[in-house]
Length: 161
Image (tube, one colour):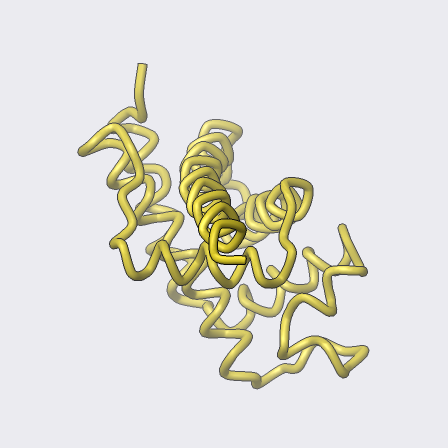
């Protein structure tokens, strides 16, 4: 069936709202990640050596914005092309970093759940199951692209050993 025009519109509409409060939503995203999986703290350089989520950390905000934007862009691509296409160097970098950090499927699920909770918080009563589902599908497709790249990286690493 593919990603519908309505799904794309729901993601874009909510992203426009989310952009108005990036600092707070960035903090919320990481608070949700740590609430769901406290052990994830060590995976983020800006959370490693602290018990609190740093309020004004530019790396935290930058990482959260990348997650939000890439999922939104994935929604647009799914609608236009039927698949997520991340530029080669960006995808290679994402695959490499996630492989290096030892990220596994359940951790992608933690971030997805935290993302959906963040969208719900941002949208309040306007957040519908359909909106959450659209963000979820776009995130899954992006995560699949990253995981595929991680497998390629791992295979390349094995052949160079």
